[in-house]
Image 1 (cartoon, rainbow, N blue to C red):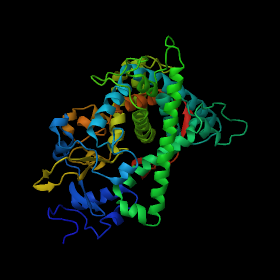
Image 2: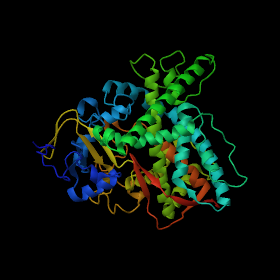
Image 3: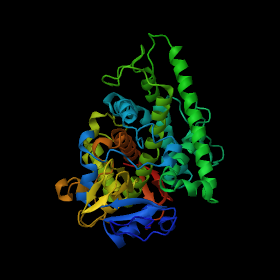
Length: 504
C-alpha cells in the first residue's frame, strides 16, 4: 500500500511516514518554500502528515487558480482544503477569509466589503488615521530629542491596533501610549487613555490568533493533540480562541444596548460595528447595500465579521508599512522623490489637506508601495482549493487539495522582473504588461480577492504622506537587510530607524 498515493509523481521532497515533510518545514514556511522552489522548480508538492499540498509560482498555473472572476466560472472557490484545525478556530464556516460555507461567505461578503471600501468610510478612515498618526509623531519628537532609535515594527503594530480598534468598534485603544510609556523616559509619560477595557490584551490575543492559523491549517490533528510541545501550543491557541470569542460577544452586546438607548433623532458614529448592527433595522445608516438580504445580522455573524476586520486589518498593513519604511529609509533618492510628489499634489508639506480623491494622484507613492510588497510580501504563500479535480501539466490535482501560490517566488523571478533584487519603484510606472499577467497579485484575484485592499492602501498612503511631511529617516544599520519571523504573515523585526524632524 502506498501511504502517500504519489502516483502523479509531481516533483517534491520525499515524505516520511506519518510526518510527511513536517521536519523540513520547521517554523518558517516561506524559508522552506524557497529551498523547495530552488530544488524542484515552480510546481511541486509536499506533505504535512499524509495530506498533500501543491505549491505553484508559474503565471500560467497561477491564472488557472486566480483568473476566473465569478463563482460559476472557477473551480478554486475555496481558500483552503478542509482542515479540522481551521474549524476548531471557528474559521471554516464563519467570516470570509477561510470560510468554506459559500452561502455564509456570500452573506458576510455583502456586509463586509461595502462597509470597508465605500468612499464615505475611507474618507472617515483618513481623518481618524491622521489623528492617531499625529499622536505617534508627538511621541517620536520626544524620542528624537532624547537621541533614541525608533523600533519601527513595534510602533506600526501599535498604530495599526489603535486604528483598527477605533475604526471597527468606536472604542479607542491605547497601544501607542502604552508603548511610549514602556520607554521609561524620566518625567515623560503619555496621558492618553483608551476606553476599551482589556483592549491591549485583545490586540495581543489577535496577534496570537493570526499565528495560530498556519499552525492549525498545516499540522494534522493527531500531532496537535498528542505530541508533547505541539500539544501545549494547540491548547494555548484554542484557549486564546475562546477568550477572543467571549470578548467579541461582549462588544457586540454592549454596542447593541448603546444603540437601543440612543434616541432615533441622534446620529450614530458610523463605525464598522455600528454599520453591521444597524443594517436592515430602523436605525439603518443606508451605507451597506445588501440586495435581497433583508434581515439583520445575528450577534454571532457580526462577531465573526469583526474578528476578521482585526485579523486581516492589523498585521498585514502594519507589517507592510514596516517593510516599506525600511526600503525608503535605505533609498534616500526614493524618499525625496516621494516628498516631491506630495508637494506637487498638495502644494505644501505643512499639514496638507488629505482627501480620498487626492490619493489617486499619488502615483509614485503607489509605485513605492507596490515595489515594497513585490520585493518582500507580507503574505508569501496564499492558499486556494478546488471543488473538483483539476489538471496541471498533465498531473491530476485531486479536489480539496490546497494549492499554495508562492507570491514571493513569483514576484522575485528574473523571468518576469528585471533585477528583481533591486528596489526600483519605477518599474510600476512603466508598461505593466512587461511584467506579465499573474506575476504580481499581492491581494489575490478573482472572487475571493482580499476584501480590505482599498482600506489597506488608504491607511498606507495616509501614513506615508504624513511621514514624508514631518520627518527624515535613517537606518541605524545602513547595511542591514530586512528580517522577519513567520507567523502566518511575515512579521518584520529589528527595523531600527533614526527619526529627525524635517528641516525644509
